[in-house]
Image 1 (cartoon, each protein chain N blue to C red):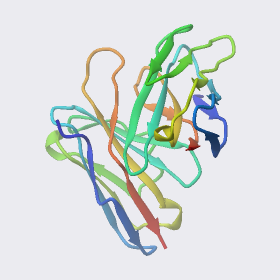
Image 2 (cartoon, one colour):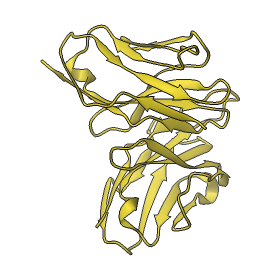
Image 3 (cartoon, each protein chain N blue to C red):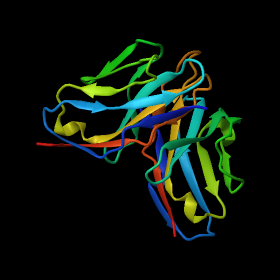
Length: 111
Length: 115
């Protein structure tokens, strides 16, 4: 079946620290991969996506590379800001477009 | 352009009662999805409408859940009778068919607590 496993939080970092949130997936065929972010009081927003192996999605300083050999899509940012505090969800999609999500990782960035 | 809206933002009900959640998708979006996040767990797909038709309802947990989208605009999700395990955050998302990978736009969710 289809599933996503992401590192459990919460994660607390100081401003300007390096961020990695691990995500691995199980899927048949070749899924598309996503990172969604939920800021406090808001809905989920698409942060970045990748549709095939070796693609790199990037947005707002965040990056993730679709690694088929390790079935991973780890999220990274070189220097986090307080405004990046949010819950981050890794997700995959197959042909039907229904999204399969991980459990979410809460990130808190302190000044 | 208005985003996806959901009502109510919070609902607290007692076991056995009925609750109806509403989702207004982005205007013109034919696809509408319902998802649910139970406390501490992953967000799970419930069902997918294309216009007023149910395209996929494989994620609906049981027959206490009824989703409708009359007229292909807004959608309602009714839980009757509610059970304790129905507590969680219910998200709605919409997208416009493009023939390829679509971006789903999510609402802020409805937080349901069943006591």
